[in-house]
Amino acid sequence: MNMANGGDPLPKALPLFSNEKSAEDDEFSHIQQRILDITDHLLEHHYLLDLEVLYYECVRSMRDIDKAQIQLALNDLVRHKILINGKALTRQKLLENPNRQRILELVRMEPGIHFSRIKAAINKESRTVQWHLKMLVKYDFIREEKFGNNIVYFDFLLNKQYDRLHYNLHKDGILSILKNIFVQPGITLMALMDKLQLPRSTLMRKVKTLIDEGLVKVSFLANQMMSLVLAENIVPILQPMLATRTLA
Image (cartoon, rainbow, N blue to C red; front, side, top):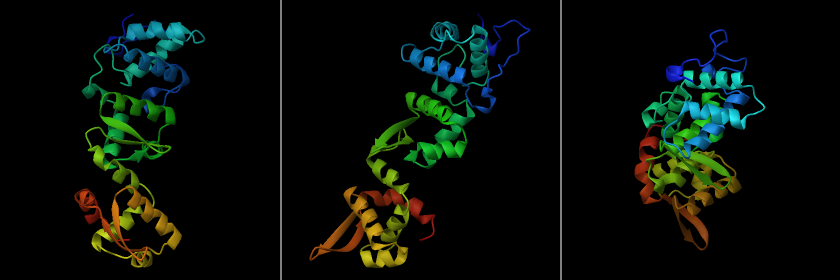
């Protein structure tokens, strides 16, 4: 069975694409998703993606699906470079897919980005986004980290020391708090509350999180929180992004 260069292994009379949703818009049909799951399993044991091996493994595992439908779905994935045809799946070839490029750009621009934000930004189904993320993680373009119940993504080369800072910057109101402390080191909680117009309980909760994470330092007088300053190690990271944003 010759699938080289996206060739059609089926008789000429058969259409190239099945009636399932095409991978042209990078949304996967149920059959294609099952093929991708099998592909992922094969790549755990083989460096080369052998399409013939993949096809027969799909036929063996997907006995409820007609062989012709499997072939058509596989051709569709190859044709649109979701799967790389018959060669080593290199890092360079992995980025031939435009949606993987877009996801990588998002992760690099917004370290600590959540899955839901990526999904909304590229406007694709969850299983499509999950597959692309899995491949980018597998080939060390990005890394996946878990904070509580949240799974977030970072550039693989980004210093892990600042993961918690980037993660917290995605939380509502945190950037405004940090910027006010940056602009006015030693600001009091009352002054910060006045500037941000937040309820005391809300601001206290957010500030406490930043203190617990080691991102903000606090001085106390008679057990009262008096002044707030940024942790020195995060200032060089924050300075470029804070300089481009208006003060809340």
